[in-house]
Image (cartoon, rainbow, N blue to C red; front, side, top):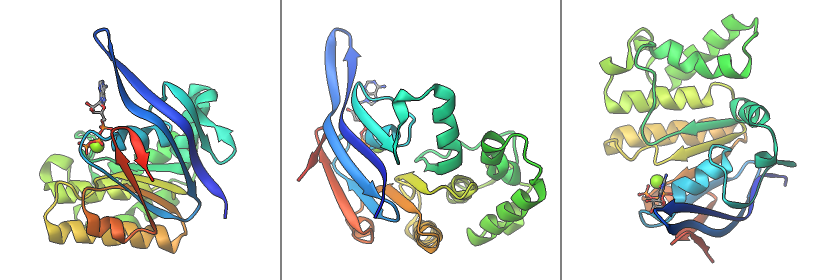
Length: 227
Ligand SMILES: Nc1ncnc2c1ncn2[C@@H]1O[C@H](COP(=O)(O)OP(=O)(O)OP(=O)(O)O)[C@@H](O)[C@H]1O
Ligand SMILES: [Mg+2]
């Protein structure tokens, strides 16, 4: 099995006034391609910080993060953006849909970053339609986010995260704000769409039952991985 993403001894320190606050304290994790991994731990343990560091969104203070064989924070910002755009899908706890774009346009957004000159617009639209159908929103393509419920917005965010068929999907409490039925629907979509393609999923959750559905659980506390 191949390692898709790896953190080696990463620390993250914020300066709060003059006092340093250590949020990640020497974290090393190695994720195999195709794995579904849960990250659990109390609030403030550093789960989101680790997820962002693994996805190339937030540079650690020390240590290294590898995406396959590339040390992502040693690359140029532009190279890092391209790796993110083409290979990584984020599902955030807050959905970050663009309010002035409709559902379809929001889902198509990642293709514009990853392939700005693409001539495959029709293929992209078909894929977006397919994904929106999978998450149960095929009737809402022209709605704007403000016309959708929280659960519907999260489903759009999920479709958007999967648009570029990312090999690595990072989901931060994707069902945190949802009722259990909608949450279960989102999780099913997430697990099915990733397992089907043997993509890698890293899922932050507070829910032990959800964590148990992953292949492996990483427990964090006070900025460290518990062994
Ligand atoms: N920009 C920042 N400046 C200062 N401190 C920060 C910053 N971002 C995060 N922190 C601190 O880092 C710690 C870890 O934050 P993080 O968001 O990773 O926790 P978490 O495990 O995801 O928690 P939760 O389960 O509540 O989402 C927290 O104590 C938080 O206050
Ligand atoms: Mg968090």
